Image (cartoon, rainbow, N blue to C red):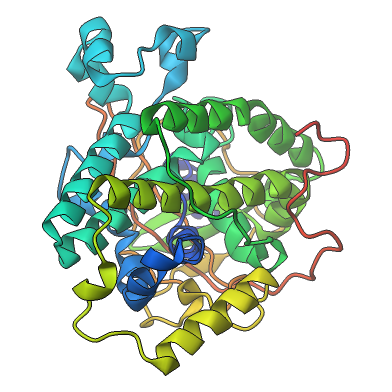
Length: 412
């Protein structure tokens, strides 16, 4: 029986666990912070609708299950286009299409042009004074821009599956911020008008691409401190056993790359709010207060002022004011199978396509508690599917530094 179980376990480990972008917790946190960086003329309107905005910021990932065209909007595999991809790739869609064909671009990702399309649609929504469209498109723009800040959204080796590091995507953009958000300094610079959005989007992607080497190398460095049994945990659900990085490994990896993750998470809100502001100005700078059926009262204004003060002091996580920390309805949890000392080391190579994961689980009230693993699968047609799971995790002690600077001697 034991040998039979080990055989099935090793077969199951051939199914990689991947992730399409920032986890729901990080996406929602970025959306909330983006509201705080807006100018006063926009802030009241966005604060009034902040809960909807935060909730809708994860919808693009949810659409992957129903729309085969959705997947490629979240990434762009720059390494597919040669040794000097940013020099070879035309920035404008029509020129890139003429050089590589639309099918090729959609197969290897269209995130820069998706951002521009949504930004233009948001501009039109402001012109039309369409409140519902403004919130929906602002949330979608927030999602795609945030995805561009993830290094693993710029490579074919998006989950470390080509370097025997499968699961790296969910570890970097999901588990680390969920476990260590209280250590991240969540302030951001104020929004400003963007004169050339497309050029700035490509700068963001090139910066993300530049972090890839350290992302892989430091995982290898940390791996030397672990055995397969301590590096991974296993989850069994619906007859399938899957592998993911252990909490101990995640915390050790955070010491190596936590500054990078926090830095990208800090930068995203400013660019998001800047694109919101740019769309608003290009849309005629409508009076957003007039789009609210009820003008902000003293209680609402005081609430915004209080949150801004707490945010500037980096106290949102400590005071449980992050909307992503709000407790959601309970979901069926996977049975945890922790690495057993009497088990043979699992097969580490994972080359076959991933199976869909169970239905998404919402973030819990403790920012360090949930562990979400999102699955990203790229086929030759460029499609992906994403699901999430979460399991309770122990609190980790706060680090002495604030998590924003790169680790000493890192060169970041």
